[in-house]
Length: 268
Image (tube, rainbow, N blue to C red; front, side, top):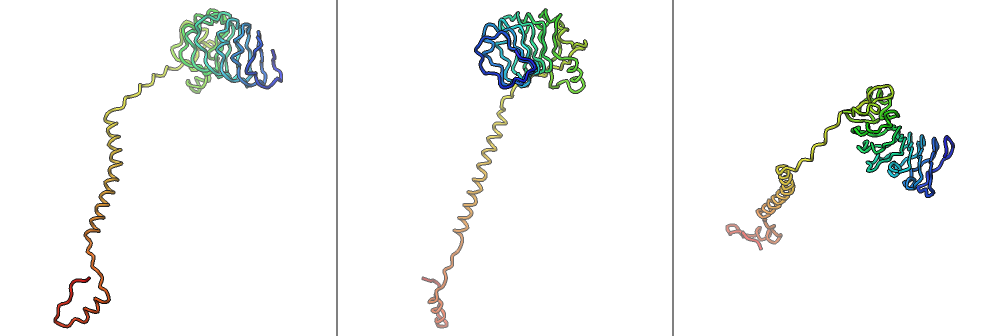
């Protein structure tokens, strides 16, 4: 256990010794939360509150651990999602993921955290439908349940309802006002669920034919032009009349032909 100390370094990737408590608040440690940490049988508390250099993924083993009573990762860079649960985790009393990088949605099986008395997921990347099952956790009705705090709601209302903070969809469950209202009694901001994306359209025959025709034209037109040019060139060469040049001997013979005699018309 360490709190507000100058301890620094990196969290070990493996912790083999069984731990009952791991409390490191406001320390300068970095690294990821090791998965092996919650594979033991004795871990009760995992507190890395305000250890803002700690990152990695939310260890799912810890969330479903039989002996865990408290998980506090507030103001860390831990990401990942809250997994769906297939068994109850009755001993977990506190789950604080506020101001972390946790994303995804609140699973419908959130009521498996049946012993929760403190739930804080404000200023995370959670979004989507708030499940009705959240209202079935009795301990939250008299405890603390924060999906958005008062500051978040005011900020989102003024700036944008699709801000970087928790962006839950309407309608909100009517059976969990203790979770869907801020500490000042205002209903948290929700947004209209976006429509599902349209299914990809099948390629049409007309468009495929047009593409094929364009490809054929792109190949055939230059080939036809080259063939026409070659043919015309050959015709021009064939039709040219070649007149042989007179040699000096032939010129002298023509000059000495007596007047009245026929001049030669062929040349050797």
